[in-house]
Length: 418
Image 1 (cartoon, rainbow, N blue to C red):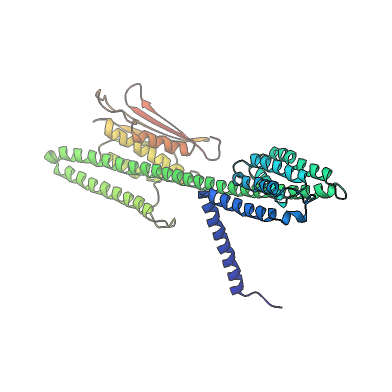
Image 2: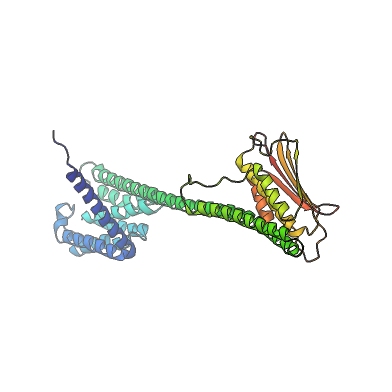
């Protein structure tokens, strides 16, 4: 037994690809200049009909005495209308049916009558199915007239073979149309999938930009506020207590280095595609003490209360929830540093309930001038609400009746419905 070699297979594949590319070029040319193909096909069949009209028609004619001029005219009437078969196939078939009626009724029985199958194919290819029923009404009368006027054996010997040919051509047109529609549907589906993929990529990019914007806002906004508070305090302390001014400068340096470290971590994540790249862990509730210490150094007294008293990072809270709580506390204290004014105090109350986790940040900010900006009206409030929404939480913020400001975040526990 012989086996096919890889060269034979590759040759067949290459030939198939060449044929497909050639057909694609022909279809593209026909789409650009359809009149060229229509004219070539019409001229070919016209020449064939005229060759038959030169004398060959008498071999199957029932009446060889039909005038030659009538045969030539009928042959042209059966061939020339093919030029418009793609644009108006029903009108072309009607003209050709009239010529076929003359051909069969006179006894010439021209073979050019079979050209009627070409517009029938285009009817099945491009028109609704009911158009085929109308074409039967045009196709049958010439056959019936010829079979009745010039009987040769049983009358169905003339009608049935042509009807079978009509049915096969109609089925071929329907099959080609179904395949073309199926291919077009696949192409459209592929296009829609590409559009959906691009949309998903854009949405993912937008979500990632929003996440990065929140992180950048929290990191830069908080640390710059702390640095600003330390710088203001150090300036006032420089004249009276150089030691306190030096402590403020040391705190500014430590805060700046911490901000740079966090920024490098965030930018490092952006630069690499490796999800396992080494980077510092995200802040958790265990880091609240360090956050509050930096705020106190900036000049804002702040107190942390736990209800009930427990570890600041219970294991049942996911890292994402802890990061959200940490960032909201950070943003709220940053707003207090910016807007509360001198002499303000802040408190953070972290409550672990059976159904939700709450964090409440309040301050005793003094009066603000009429042109001062209210805390939480910029990007910070939007970022806090987005973080809360990620875990089906709610965020409420607003002024207190006796002065000051409150930010309240509620996040349901992961084992309870939101």
